[in-house]
Image 1 (spheres, rainbow, N blue to C red):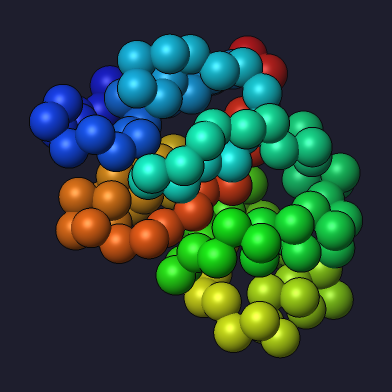
Image 2: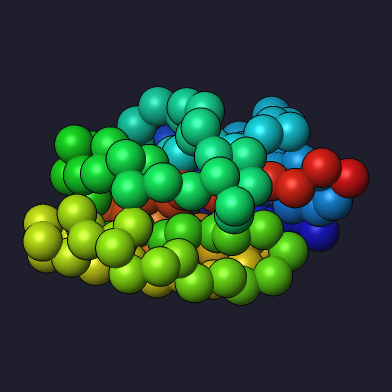
Length: 125
């Protein structure tokens, strides 16, 4: 699926998503990533939903987002509440959705100028 981006915004945007990849600023990635609208794009250690640990969420707090979108792969899965405890205690909003919906929502929020962080799992093709 190709997604539209505003080439003049200077923000990181999702430009495509499909089986086994996500395309950020027209560069494909075949692994889990964390990105913000204006920050670096980095690897996110959990490669599958089953790999998620509390530390994976607590490391996102240091990036000081307004909101975190968590893409859990081709299907929406909800992490156990104890894994999300650090986000709740830090009073950082989060939304959990399938990765394709997370990509679309991320682009919309970036287009609105929001400080959003996307933690995205990319399942192998």
